Image (cartoon, rainbow, N blue to C red; front, side, top):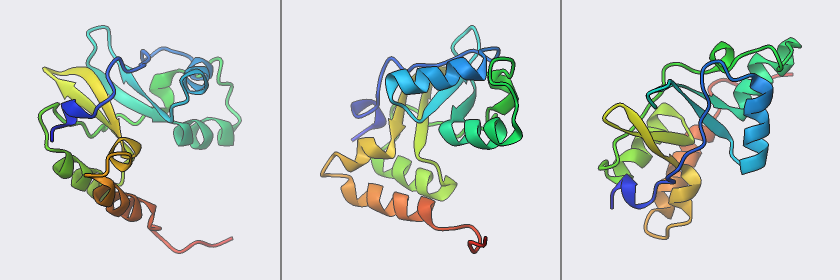
Length: 144
């Protein structure tokens, strides 16, 4: 099975100059945990997760109305093609420790795959479980 068979189409995305407040509102409205950042041609330039908003905005006390998407986005984005095998994508997500994978064709965002998309498919629930286990393992010991 290929990513194009399970990916979400019509992905919500923002531009580089979208205020972070609007990004958060889009996440709330669409019940999503990440938003790709694209240029005017639909090429992906970054991604913002709900965690990015907390760690790179809220924790610093910066005003989300004036902070732009480009200020807090992760610009090194791991992407996949629509024809990538689902199991291969699952392994890549585990290796890179990411929960969401933008799907790009001809340098343009065409979809999004989340671990949840894999988990709801009985054929891939084991891969999703293994990927989540990899992602959730701590990178260093927890201390207070």
